Image 1 (cartoon, rainbow, N blue to C red):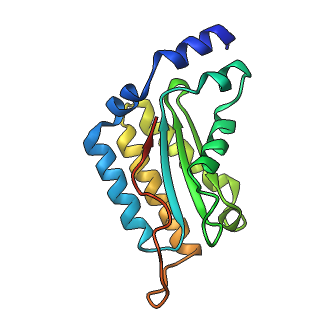
Image 2 (image 1 turned 135 degrees about the vertical axis):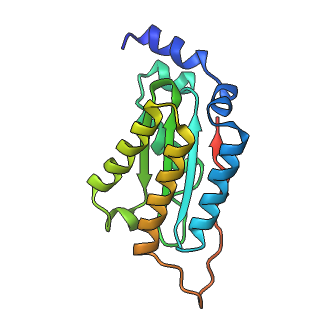
Length: 168
């Protein structure tokens, strides 16, 4: 994509557009679903929806994946006790989906599984159902975390990160 067109596309959208695409009700349902999911496992799950990349990323031609990895750090998803945090990242300007998982879970889940979750999200997004795509992804990632890092009723399971989607 031409660099100037890419910059214009990203700068055209802002946080208001991201909130409009999902709506307050969908954001609340996603937050509730993340919270419910985290009661079944010791992992941490974050959802980040970004309208467009910051200008500094655009100037250097950075990818959505690079930004998702950066947000993984900025949102402290990497900083969980069991190294089992997962970030579901959506970049609206390019309709890109990235799932970034910490090393504790990536050692147990094949890359193809993450791609399948992304593909299912993309199919929902193509028909404009962003909420359904994100909710289904939260369910699928939560099931993987529960399978590999189940919550044990006798151990403390603190909520290390906010459950509310990060919208930018």
